[in-house]
Length: 101
Ligand SMILES: N[C@@H](CCC(=O)N[C@@H](CS)C(=O)NCC(=O)O)C(=O)O
Image (cartoon, protein in one colour):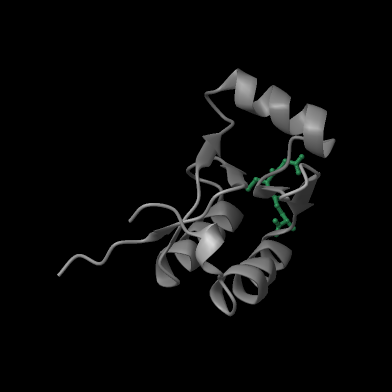
């Protein structure tokens, strides 16, 4: 049986495929059934430029978080991202953070 993952709006994960820290975060997303738009930086120069311009450095994984008021936060460090996912999205995901299934 294939279970559908919950689409999370206002978030983007900057990553590249072979980065072990990114794999850790992506596995957590799969484990918790969350779907966040991915922004690949190794082969996509624009995504990498956006990451540096917004977050300040070309390090992945980095979670771009946009609040309802339009503020943007760039969260580095895989363990901090996983903690954020669990506390903010897994434990108390309100309906307005889920998109179409
Ligand atoms: N402590 C960080 C390590 C992340 C890390 O080293 N990522 C590598 C890719 S696997 C990277 O982006 N290196 C480039 C840099 O740090 O400037 C984490 O857990 O997220």
